[in-house]
Image (cartoon, rainbow, N blue to C red):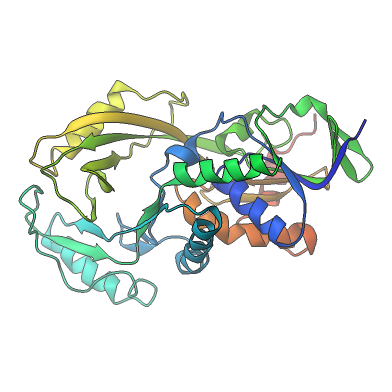
Length: 356
């Protein structure tokens, strides 16, 4: 028996689920969300918004467009949720050679990078940090406290009775004409925003999602005194109260959710190459990044079921990508607009899809 009718069922309330549910709600659509907190990559992520790939001094995919949408999106979230979770600070890219300095100057002259890369080299003035060649400063960067934001959003949904904190059972999904029935809920559409959890989804486990495990350590170091982030062999991010997040590892083989001693040792070894003061490791976290085979987002319609959609594959850049793509997916569903081929899940249909 159907007790509740909504426009959308949304499975997952990480960065992807938050972005698409808010976009649909803004357009006047009703929804009910499901999340049993089994996927935590959005919660433990560094939450960094940075438009530059600092290994090669190149712009990230659609970086300018994403920054223009994402930062106002999260500022509005702060006002709506009455929480502070946006932190603004610069990133200082540590140089390893004069050649890297020269590469920085070349990159800083490029139109897409000029707004973000300071053309003046920064000399090291912090005796706690090791560097012989100084830094390049990346402007207009920072991070979100994703755990604070997502918990506040989940609380809001629960108060409005829009969240079911339970496992979504794929076996109970029934197609009823152009409707989807799940338990006592009838919906026009369902959108799966499950991150790496989509590998267990029988409707969308056909496309190649290569989970990439990332681990961070949290250190306490009263002597370090950083009010900016450092990108070196590791990323050192200030958290306040003498706390810093240090990461992250990239492991394509380990898909377990638990932190490992190997990752901690790797991170500490890299950290000691960058700083020369004492610290204490106070925490360690791990998550699986949902990265597609071609390293592009995976969004769009199921190849067989017209009212079933996927919103996934954001890798380590979900903070910027999710608000940017949510309107595109909403347009695709509600206005029948065409998705760009490089993000459309249809690009995997012929090669990977096998009907059960």
